[in-house]
Length: 218
Image 1 (cartoon, one colour):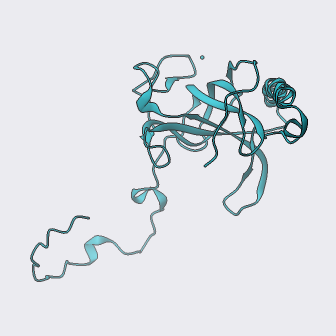
Image 2 (cartoon, rainbow, N blue to C red):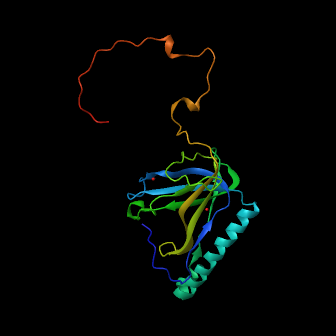
Image 3 (cartoon, rainbow, N blue to C red):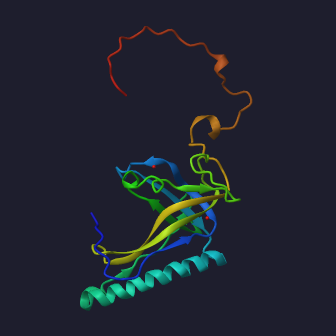
């Protein structure tokens, strides 16, 4: 498992706000413990790299990463310093068929929520008018227009020899909401004229079986 060393640089992180983008897999209310037993909140933000606000945002974060990179190379020195690389800030976005869309994805997380103090263990949520919706916001579905506040934290990963920036998520502003349906129920389908309906059949009688007690994260 990759581990992060003590930072070999003096540059500090900073609070930043992303440009507006589209939400993807936004988990802001229910703790996700699949990959982190202490729980985490996370979201992906899909942005257009040709948008001027996105370009300016990337440039600002790249400046922070560049300082951390330079200091890391100087501190490690020699062959170790020369081996250090800068980790990309975003990933390419692909559609359902695996084709590149030309968009990019930023990933934001709040990790180890169980270890955080009250008030720092949740994502603060605001609407477009900056009204606080924390604890009273519907689930944010894919395609919602959002922006995120986060702490840009420089790090050096010794195992991969990379300097990068962690996007430590703190706040969410919902600009346009597309509520999450969860993919459950009949919402995935359209009505079909002349098709099967439950009233056309009667349940068949079956013999009762004995219960075998089997149990089935601005």
